[in-house]
Length: 129
Image 1: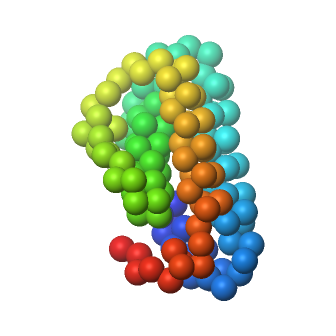
Image 2: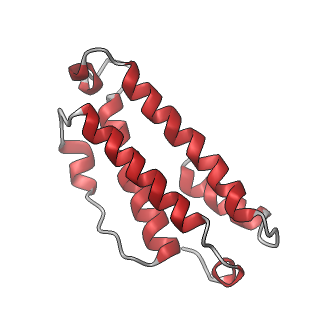
Image 3: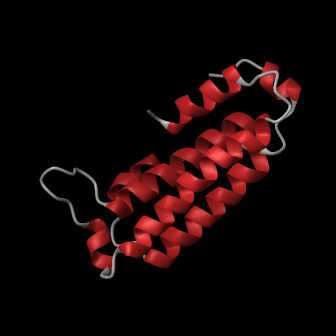
């Protein structure tokens, strides 16, 4: 299930719950921390980009896609900052440094946290895409 759908489900199920913001963030943060942990497990940085027969995208490409998707969805949909998504880069970039992947993941965690923790009741009443 896409994280966007998980977010919609949480908003729907907890719409009247005043604890929705911490609840949402507590669901996203461990997932993004797990992504960072997985990236750090690769001793050889080049292996982040290896594609195997049964896996169509390496961990590095998955990281780029997830981070750009979350930045776009969370920041644009909930915070209306109009983040410009770089979808083509998500699938064409290769050999991005591990440090850059980790930094981008940390930045995404900050964006998700800042956006989710400031969601208001009025925001929850808005029509979502």
